[in-house]
Amino acid sequence: MPGISRIAFELFGFPVYWYGMLIALGMLLGVMLASAREGLYRVKKDSVFNFVLIAIPAALVCARIYYVAFTWDSYAGNPMEIFNVRNGGMAIYGGVIGGVLTGWIYTRRAKISFSTLADLCAPALALGQAIGRWGNFFNQEAFGRAIESPSLCFFPLGVYIESLQEWHYATFFYESVWCFLIVAFILIAERKRFFKRPGDVFLWYLLTYSAERMVVEGMRTDSLYLGGIRISQLLSAVMLFACAALFLIRASKKIARSRLILHASLLAILTGLTLCALKLLGTPLQVIHALAALAFSAYLYKYNT
Picture 1 (cartoon, rainbow, N blue to C red):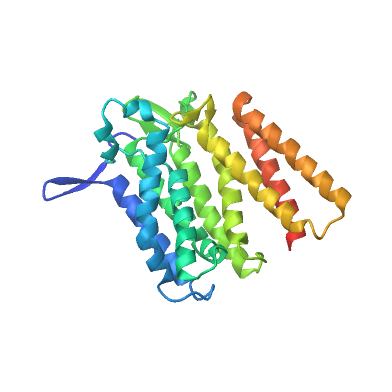
Picture 2 (tube, rainbow, N blue to C red):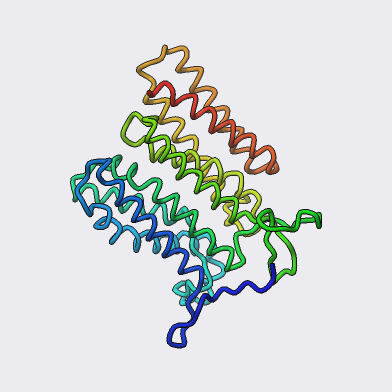
């Protein structure tokens, strides 16, 4: 797939990059989706618009801070390079954290339930991620290891990296597809009245995205590390089991004490095994652990409904 250009067009002599355009498009469509669902959650009209006016700048800043914090060696010699975002360097998890913190502050002032706002914005967030990931395609980043078999050198399984003159697994594409599936799952599940309590939609977004990221991150070659562990994998595992623990806590009043202890013990064991898998094991076993964690979380959820 040679010939990919990072520049979409030039405006008054200045290059306009695909990366920025796709991030902006993802945000725009996400805002439109969330705005269209305001009536469903009975919030005041334009609440989403008022929220994103502060949430988007905060999310972008936090996404950059998150990336810079874990790649500080690249910026220590030239701190001004921190402000040069034209070459990428934005971390999705940083943006999510920034958006969540901003949402918590906003709901206190706007007198809206945080759970309501989180549920309202969850599919919009996934949609923005699904579209924004294509910026990685044009930036030639967020790809996996090299593909050894010539028969597998085709898109969308792989992507050709011009700087390396090699085909690599298209991990950005895998995540994009998964995020589109998250959007579809949430919208369909809402219509089927699958979600029963405030906050359930957002928790399921966190569950499904974390399970995917825990696997796909293990295939990438440009991960951010902390003590030999991929940071995004570790954070994904923590969020995945935090959601499962919350389901268990919510269900604690409905199940016998003995079964509660059993479920808590199984959750603790699975958490420990998964954390070990992130450090010691390869991607296939990480897939098994992610699927097991997601299945166990779904099992716990039934006690919450």
